[in-house]
Image 1 (spheres, rainbow, N blue to C red):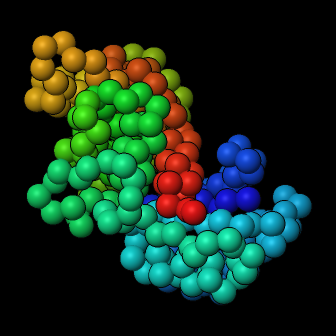
Image 2: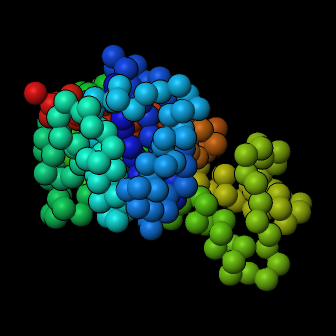
Length: 262
């Protein structure tokens, strides 16, 4: 079995694959101070609850945007996953993914963005826009020749909501999981609700238009794919999100591990 770990600024999503099939998935808060031993205690409990023997884990790969946690996860794998058939893998701009990174400073590209790009590229083999709704909303651009071109980064939905509640005296924290009934909000809560969902939906459409215009020529095919915890919530308010894949990052790590394992 292969343990894949996607470490974000807010949450860590891990998945366990057996014969290329995802059989277990966990989503936990990211704590940058967590040590390898603390990770071992937490995952020992998760494995026990799901009837998993850690000695059945024969591969490990992590993609992290939190440097301290990347080190902790690597030490966790080295110390506790003793039956791995190959050394633990850490995704970076130097990892062999099959994509060519064309940005000015490849080392600046987050591991999660690289993983998402390769997962989408392997699926479509066309020009791509990958939109990840995480702590930040990121747009990743891949050319029709399999080149990672860069993209844009925007404040995430949770960050925006926290800023409204934390920097204003009368605006409350709200839950945006339910649909908006009207664009015009007739209460403070409904006004925020509408502003967030319709506002982010409109931002998605505008950025897709601008990025697509710059990326493709002569009616070249381009696919739009969304991922991340908030993707399904925003999708109904955007005309551009064609496909939502919440497992894109985990599947990308599976592909990269296979590519880099003898």
